Image (cartoon, rainbow, N blue to C red; front, top):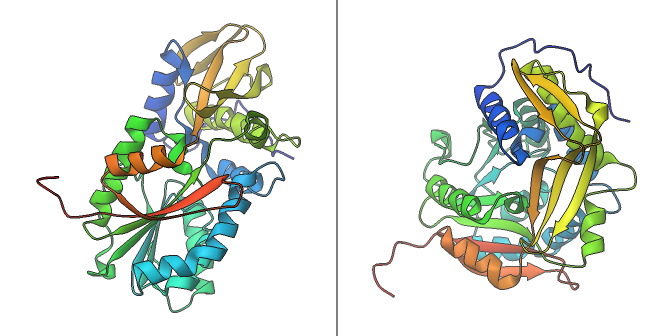
Length: 326
């Protein structure tokens, strides 16, 4: 199922210096780690889209059902003519539900995976032929200059999939502040957040029976080998998903199944059997925690919708003008 890549195949283009820096720093740390954003080369993006269709992976279908039901409510509150700015757009699979409901003035997808971004933007342009589409390849962790072509139209940010859960609380707050800076006072943000629930259900969603999530996780090692001249023996690692109750998060790791040594960008690393590379967090939120995080990031929650089992929520928030007193 996974298209194997030769782990000895050196990169044919100059590697992303930020990718190299993050990998070398992360592999040098006592708890080895690589930021989850580097999952999303082309193959990683394809594998993630496959994950969203898995029977164990409830977030996508639950959020989609919420959008199908409540996008008209979002449109009623937000009003027509907003420029929709999607952060981490990926395949933009859920985006048509929102665009159909709110009749936007423009659509600006932002993603770090350039090829995937452009293909998705082109497909969306064909589906909505009268809609101006302005894709931006960028890391949206910092404020981004939006295209002048969208003019002074009010903005509606879109951040589905509970992607905010991949970040620790301080980083999530920084991101929300960056989004507020990108979109400006008066902008709104529609964001998906996964809820805390039964541990078995959570772990299954990140360790599926078909091992697609395992392939997604291991693909990070393929990317390191390919782009950073690595010789990591992929077969020496296995995918691990575990629930960290104290941090209210699922953690994904790549665990060494034996003592192993390897080189990346000319630097030598060694790992003991059982040692892991921490690759992803997926934090889960209660209602109060979600609203408090949004508030810390400069957003005031104005509406919230959840499914009958309270498994997942979408929240609509707004950037209010600064206040100088309670």
